[in-house]
Image 1 (cartoon, one colour):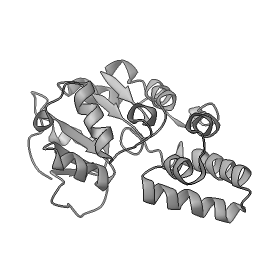
Image 2 (cartoon, one colour):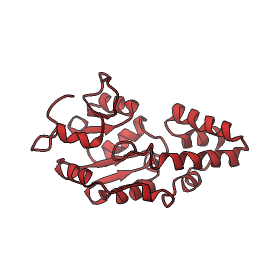
Image 3 (cartoon, one colour):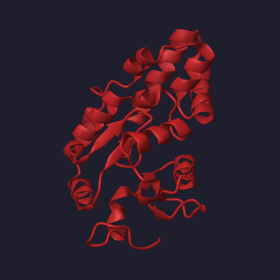
Image 4 (cartoon, rainbow, N blue to C red):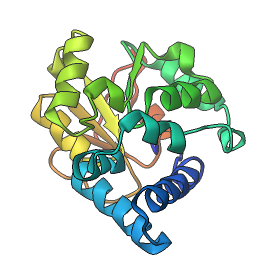
Length: 210
């Protein structure tokens, strides 16, 4: 969802990163600089800052999520997109959102984007028992919970590690990124979610490589 359905890098992430830094600083009694470094280190090592804090410091997950993902302060930065709404309506099949953010945050963002009613199901980090994408647990949960056949799925994400895991399960993959590379586990690359229009045929299926 983040950096795929909307540009979280300029909307929600700055506020969330700041709250994470302040939470870490307060809980672990660290400087601002060290808090920021630890946040980034855990994100790279575990796929989510929260997981690192839980594993290495015994932080309680729900408390952390409540403190860092309140949407009220930046809801005005998320705008409903008519083109996104139109795109999702054109795509056949289930539309399932799998986020490493908390469930309530996912629900709030989808609602603000105006696409909540177009999504079949959505999940957050609590759904995978705090083992985020690209963990095997997260993907196994999604497949099992929705009774999916991986070879009939198209996985759209901005993160290459997530896409690599999806591809290993037999899913087709779409990388939402402006990079000119296209790793072998990426079937399609588009600079933004709105460019999926160029890949969608009249029947709502992906039609050609980019």
